[in-house]
Image 1 (cartoon, rainbow, N blue to C red):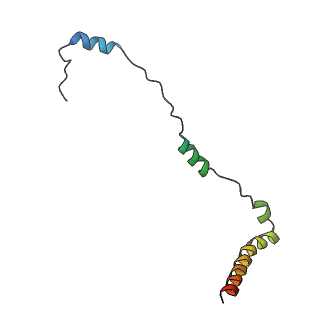
Image 2: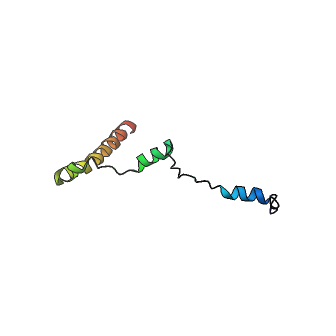
Image 3: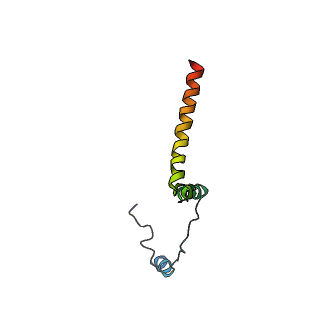
Length: 81
């Protein structure tokens, strides 16, 4: 629509040009989903850091899953064969 319907209305144009509207900056609040995503992406502390700093406990932490896997495998082999 390139045609200006108020082109001939000079008084109306002058009156409209007198007024200026100031729009305040509107800060949008975070939604619940955005807050949840921010919570999930925030950095956390490693709860195993004090244990892993000692060399003796580090090997225990690594060996427990391996031992449990071998135990479960052995139990399955005994049950099914």
